[in-house]
Length: 193
View 1 (tube, rainbow, N blue to C red):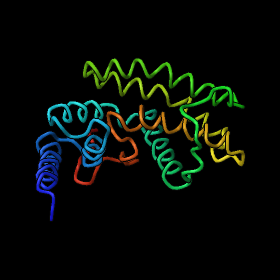
View 2: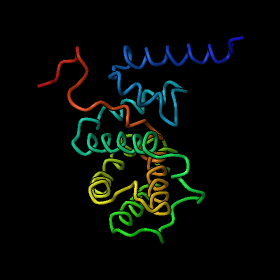
View 3: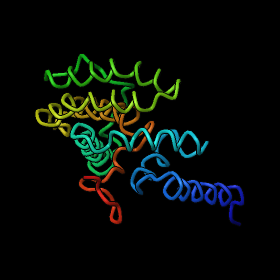
View 4: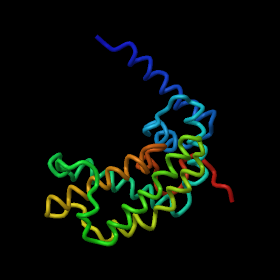
C-alpha cells in the first residue's frame, strides 16, 4: 500500500520546487541544489533565501570550482569508494596525514566549520556561501596533490573520511553543490550584458 504521508510530502516538495523556480526566479539547478541539501525544502521561505544567496555567488570562479570539487568528491565517495574503504575508524585522524595538502584541507575545514555553523544558525546564507568559496584554493591543492584512493587502506580510509566530513559540512548542508551545473545560465535565460 502506498505511503499517504510520503505522497503528500512528495507533492509539497514538487510544489515548492515549482514555486522556487517560477515565482522565486531561481535556476533549475539552484532549485535542485537547495531542495536536495541537508536543510531540504521546508520551510519554503528558508529554501528561497538559501537559493537567492546561492544565485548571487554561484557564477564566480571560486564557487564554480568548488561546485566541481563537490561533484568530484561525490563521485569518489559514491562510485569509487567501497564500504570497506571507509574503515572502522571514527572521524579524521590527523596523525595519518602524510602530505601538507591533507593538513591544509583539514585545518581549513576546521576553521570554516564554526563560521558556517554560526551563519547557518542565524540564516546568513550569503555569508556562508562566500565563506565556502574561500575553501576553493585549499580544496584544489588537495585534489592536485593527494591520491585519495591510496593503496594503503588506513590512508585511503582517513582521506575518504576527510572528504565525507567536507561533503557533509560544505558541499551539501545548505545546498548540494554537486547539483550546480557548470557553464552558462539555463536555456531561456538571457545573460545581462
